[in-house]
Length: 364
Image 1: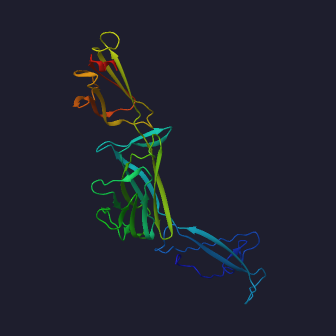
Image 2 (image 1 turned 45 degrees about the vertical axis):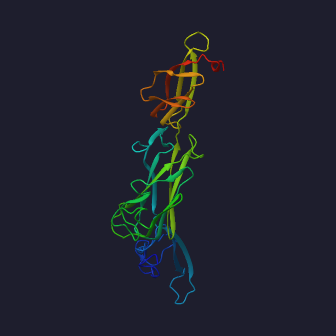
Image 3 (image 1 turned 135 degrees about the vertical axis):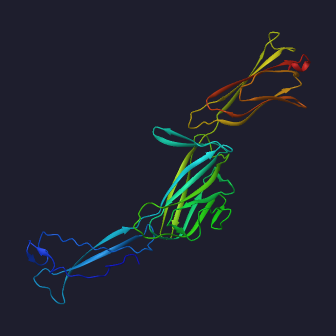
């Protein structure tokens, strides 16, 4: 079922072997006889198949060969494994919202992917297919805690390409979980059911591949603390073998701190009728592996009408990337600063003033 050609054949080497240069006969002492037998592997063999082939020699040490033995038999077995399906999983691209890309750093010569909460991670999986048949071939990817599948352009997983002459009986390029019953997503697992994957035997031995793409996003999950490595593994399996590969990224989160200081600017010590300077300091500190930019920031400070006169609010300093606004509520006025991004390793200052009432409440 595996080898074709000379398997099971017999031959006599006594009369065809020349020893000592001129004398015909069997090998003499201290001589080595090497026989080379070519037995092609059948074209339907599966990848990663291990098989054994045994050779047996019947020997007679005296001159002449008896018709019916007895012979001395020696044998040896060689073990061979057919080439496997190779799998390579990589982080292809990522984005904050719609257009930002995953940051790839190099630390001491090692590439490190970073991703933050809400970021979309795109994984590419490349399968290098050897010649032969792989029946019941499936690829399964089960996401770890902290990752979830997300549809991008209507698909959570898709077949990008299948190089000719590779064929799969159940999947073709362009198939997705949205249009093919053979790509299924269940919870945090996705399965590509290829059916039988085949690559015909030809003289062309250049690598031929199947490429898949998966879309995931980083959840706001308790496991996704700053600096935590998250590893995602894919497994290609078929009748007779399997291959796995993984890709890892580091969770990168903002490290935001906010400090508020109130300072009277008139009348000396704090008292009713004083004008207060409100200073806010926003920091996003941390190293470039664990800490990332903060996005969609909102800072709110309620100026309570019981203590302060909201009509005296005066904006002083607002960073260029932030907007300043106010909103009246039953309890007072909210001072609000908003920005799309606060870069890592920044310190930002916000200041405004307001008047402290002279009422009895101000004594509190």
